[in-house]
Length: 258
Length: 352
Ligand SMILES: Nc1ncnc2c1ncn2[C@@H]1O[C@H](COP(=O)(O)OP(=O)(O)OP(=O)(O)O)[C@@H](O)[C@H]1O
Ligand SMILES: [Mg+2]
Image (cartoon, rainbow over all chains, first blue to last red; front, side, top):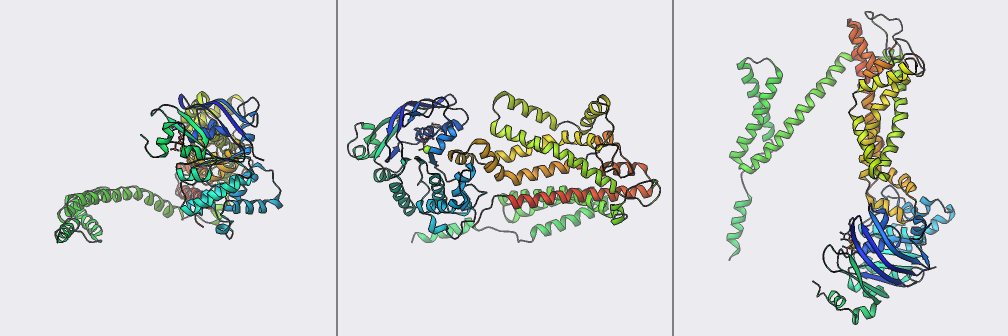
């Protein structure tokens, strides 16, 4: 069951440093939304505010609203742990648990939370690994440590780990930045399949990738170094790439930036 | 062709004179011989002086010879290497001679009888007797001290690394620092005045264990803290992002990742307090008899036994002191190897 996200007036700080300012947007359910923008403009920060991971950073603070189907994630009495179970995340750098086997890595979300049936675990792990396009490479060594995989395999392992808990929204922070073109393609296909079930948000520096996988694209920018990042515009991907309404977007996309 | 001169030039700058592989050994042997000769001629009879002269000759000789054959940059490189070797040897010589001395003197009376009997009524000047009672005492006191200090120390470290922000964490860190510097005799006096003089409890292994745990706690906190800090933040975030609560993340992800290092740190702390004499002297009092109950009456312990036997000064008791010292070193060594084994066995495994 995919859910819609409505963000309004969101500002995030690291201590006294304002990293992003006054961002409002809607992320449609069962679609892929891509975030693009120059390095340091706050894409990762914004992504992490969507599942309350931002506050994990010491000094991390958020103002504004994030509505998940009409429920404010930053409202009173909302449990961040429950939010993160509903909204999964894949990080920029692959981070499998070094003490766990490949199998346990995928099962980690279920096992660490303790709510699973032993009999189902094998099926879920196989389904998730197949979903992340890794099954064929690891099916003979599920009991070996996950840190023994290549970087790209580790990233797919992390994707498998994230989808194993069946979140309703999946946030991906440059999931392909460490991958070869074939794995990248595999992940893009995977994203295409996953959007049938999940709402997906993906950060990418690769314009072609944004154009290929996403339905809507959001462009972020900052006016100067040290200034907070802002949302410049969000629109259908086709429109952003053919005929954006803001000049800065066109400059960025066509490489005439800075 | 423009290639040829370039190639020739490269060859001339890249290739230089070089000393053969065996040259450091030759220089070392030479400087040892010269050092010995000079010392003999000058009538120096301290072997330490001989060694120092040889070491200086070795470093100087390396520089001069390498500078002539290989040039100044390589010479500096070789001097740095030879200094490292000299420092290594300076560090190792006392260690080896200490172990050598202990083994040599200790084996005289070190046998199964010695390990399995107490002193009982054996007089200082008599031969016989053993350290069974002291081993029991050391095991119990160190065991109890660890039972107190390890949980508190590890939990404190978890608090400092995972939760501690602001004033309280700063204060705790400060007190841990202060505790690290407490001399063992002061820890002993503290427990003495509090437990024995104010609460009027008697001398016992437990009283000694309390003082030992005071000494052990800061070491455990510090080493555990360092190990927890080594756990990459990404792992914590990965776990949190899966919707795992923080306490479970610490229990299931952070601790398993660092358990090897934590165990090593704890074992080193145990090894450190095993050799403590002062608090045991004050609080456990010492006895020649076997006392299995750490909560009642004086006990013995290995360091205390060594001290008492050596202080008695008769040939038989000095032999016993050395044998007990050997037993103590073996005890600590076994602990250390156990810690290493655990650390290796528990360490995150790479590879396929
Ligand atoms: N842990 C942190 N503490 C303090 N400031 C941070 C932290 N992480 C990021 N920032 C700051 O927040 C701003 C936005 O960073 P963010 O990582 O969100 O950028 P980004 O758009 O994801 O960049 P990239 O494309 O390089 O990943 C930057 O100015 C950065 O310096
Ligand atoms: Mg980023």
